[in-house]
Length: 339
Image 1: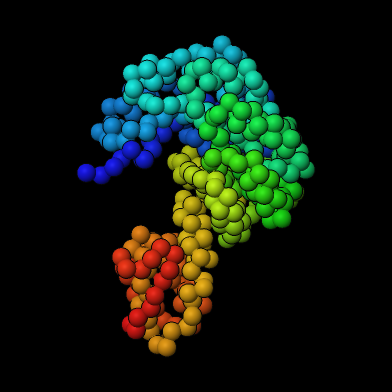
Image 2 (image 1 turned 30 degrees about the horizontal axis):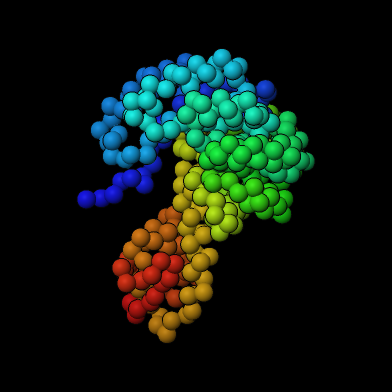
């Protein structure tokens, strides 16, 4: 029988802009999440519980995303957390996760969250460069992130950070500086969301005025591949790369510019993989070859629309006639046979 204890089910409850002290330059949460104005928490949770595969995993979590949860009025926070408490007490869900700003955490808030069953707190860090934060209208400093992470560790929360490469004033050196600073803070989890220009944001005005240029898709993929590798090598679990695909974004033309792509995360993971196998890319003695890869890494080798196959073919100056998954090929290695 399969062991499902390590699988993780997260049921999201989006609270766009709730508790936010202002609207950041890049933010349009309702379009990103695609949720209606009125949030019916029991309805969302009951729908999840009644789904056919709900009990396939023991690790089930309720997550409040969007907005600034810990900047809500204490009464509102308590009401929201109390509304999900019966689902925790009944065992239908095991824990609660929230996301918030780095300047909206203190001892009293940590105590309230612990008392109400919150186990994971994600911080919208975006950058550890103060100039980037100022140009992006964040309203907090890198020092706030340091303080909030210290507090969250003090109260033994599982910690997460959300990072946004390509904001105004950002460059690769600054972004990798952010990554270096984050590794020192030792979060458990990280998300990488490259900045995109969404209709109706202040960033879209700067874009149209010629004062902001977003990252190109290939550029953003390269930045995130380098960042994810660095984070993961330091023990941080990168759980999300790129905005999730939402009809309100892709189908309604709300993304004006920037590296938004429904397969963005796969592109990054494929590039990471190809960087790992570079040492095996030695030109074989045949004009045509079949490539053997670990069966679990077949999609990573092939890449989005076979970009990975073309990348290897160009590097070797050899025609690749096929790619096969092979259980005898170790992870992160490849082999060739005449094809």
